[in-house]
Image (cartoon, rainbow, N blue to C red; front, side):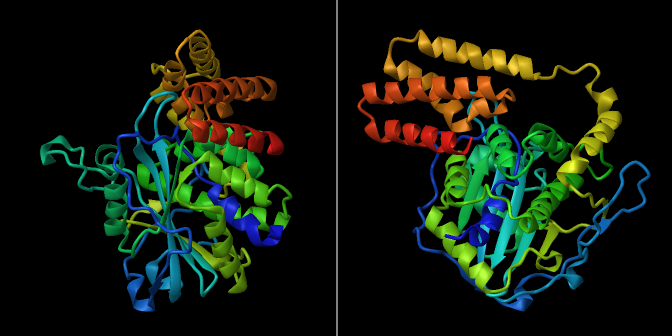
Length: 401
């Protein structure tokens, strides 16, 4: 497939964030979808008529450099025809620990017949039935994913947003997001970019602003990366991007979406991509330009706003994270049983834990150790399929890094 026909979708796929990704093996999985494209049709009157956030351009602390968004539902385009709904979720876990709180929730809608993209940002603390007593205050969307599983989570998002079925899902966390961002031009500041996108305490609108920022970041990457004609986003990069995350998307499905969108006029122009907040509320949020050159300035301003909150807190440093990773690998190396090695390393492998190591030489070393130990353990347990998957992923990442 030609690069021009594939680059924008993997750019979108690589534009999300948050903390490490995994799904418990005991968790109930949703019904499998066929590899062929699954889609719905919509009519103009089904898109909704609620008002959404106004942009606050009056801040003296943050410089707004991109205000091209349409900001009220009455002004949004109302495309018709076939639509593909893809849920992109950033889940909050820690290295080697299970847990799937949904901290970033972005529903991306591809209007195939119109060549348009709608991004619906849903704050993590949106009220939703997570299966807890009402008195606990825990019935929030973030907890639905963790407590009730993916199927219930997708149903909750569908109810909140008022859209049709969610056909495809993508989940990943902090380590995977670092690697994905590096693929699309944030190689030197991927971690800082994620920090900016995760911040909510620096803003008056809190989690609403954070969610809106994340939606705008997806839009910003599309608008800023498409015209550059970057050479990274070829079919190999699409395969690596898909391999880094948990998803039911396949390469063939991505290709079909990309082809249909390009055939129907998608060109990366501003008026073809918009962001909405759901549930729709009237509040002030700010519209920032998340170009790579602006990330450092935004990060410094966030630091100045939240410094007093972090004064007495315990923070994980890059050094402490690396020590934990070293200790985990050392323990696996000294473990005699194959099952013990698998128990220690299968989750850090799925989380791509090495991608948080900024030094390329040390990162490569940790990746090699984890993948080789895990592959050997799978083979000792006669699990050839999983062993081959680890080997193939290692070779794929080597080719692009």
